[in-house]
Image (tube, rainbow, N blue to C red):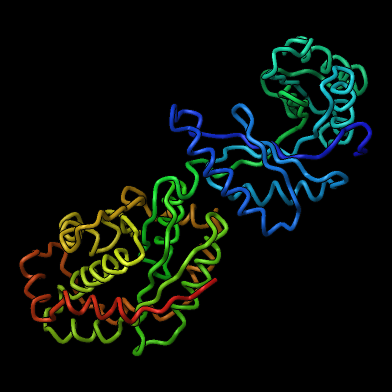
Length: 398
């Protein structure tokens, strides 16, 4: 692609549900633009991010290459709040310039080389432009048909040329990358994820990032009765998820001795739920210290014995902070598919010594009674124990 015909490479970003936010929309857009700028610090290309009507445009420095534009597009595709990312060309607001750009863009495409069916879709945000959208469609579409002999298909095109007339320029592009959707991270506050090394909790963290929460991660290690494998695994998962939000923090609690105390209580069938309640109490203490307003878990209703409705209710009773369970209605196949899509499944499937294996009774209680659990906690002095556990946490920086 030559600069003379196609102008300057840029990246055009389409917003999702942010456009429905009414009077609060500007707050969401400001957060989103800040997140985009933070994400692009890792690309090492100086860019100019500008808000337009319903879109965000990223302009690259003069002389930037198509490869640099692609690097920018790939990076912002991980930023929640965007639904489409288009690597576009910025051309002058002149019908002749738009026509030439459209022709060259199609001529460079693989679809044109195999005679694909095509369509032109124009949008005129600036009504001062001399041609209406349908007139621009006919102008560019007719020239493409004459130049390359491609058949027109307005219903199911294999190649679509998009033309968007904006305030100061026209954007021309084909195709694009799907974005993450949802809301900008940080627009809904902060929460703390109980992060195991399994498949579910990383997916739960991602789903809540998409709903605008900036999350920190709390991992319970079986140390000193297990190795550090689970910590390395949790760290790898947090690094993988960090591309969606940035500035992630991982906290690790050495939980082995507390588990030993629960096991020594003699309530074998209740041990798993008692452990979960102590984890939640500890997480709540940590959340207060880091000013997180909610806890997040990867629970899915009925997936394992600790996740029956009765047991989930018993766990909720342990804390006052809300517990968010974004996967509560998902089955394992759906969770694994999402984990594969976001890149965490391969890490989660690595073997490790999970702390939960230390408390694996032959038969676990599926209908735990809250009063029985409170008696165990009274013997353990759980309120004091969770403070001690919170005091013992270590931060692992990315």
